[in-house]
Image (cartoon, rainbow, N blue to C red; front, side, top):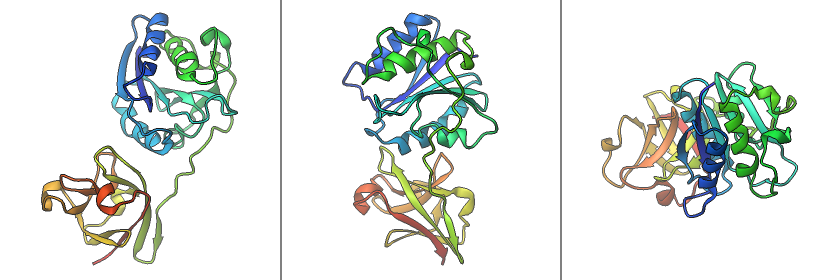
Length: 256
């Protein structure tokens, strides 16, 4: 078990929400090392959080506890979740935010956080990040077993991420989300994209996959394999989301 705890939320930086989670963690474990991944996930955008989580979690030492809170269902029927998967721990709402990780590793352990001794005394209906997730992560960092937090959760929620499909010599995928630069991140793995193919985004012919943004002129669209290993539609020193004036579009790969 590590005393490193990462935080990923859609809380933003104007309010106290992320800061008070750190206070709760340090109140339970003053030796915790807290790493802010980002608090600028777009509000309620579980897909974006799920894919960013999958992109960074493995770069930390094994045993790191990753807290992710994008929780539009807070106070509703969704349950609080803790998981051990691939040598790491995860804490947050059971709304699919962890499914891209849990479905990519063998034999994850997933529990519902139910034991009140690992929560704050007064749990609000609107701020489980402070009252449930931060305390649970802090107790894990002090060596509490994940199974002490509650009973096994048999079927955690899945995002049911659409898979790219092959139709003849064409591969069809979708854009999952746009990052802060306006890059449109698709569900097509880079290893599916052959160098002799051409990428289309909606009705736009983007061209072959490029090796760098500088391969096209400023303001031009390009296709590139991003750092997450997925095909992205981008603009050199610009925003593909703004150029295409949309975010959720089909991406197609065809022969020249």
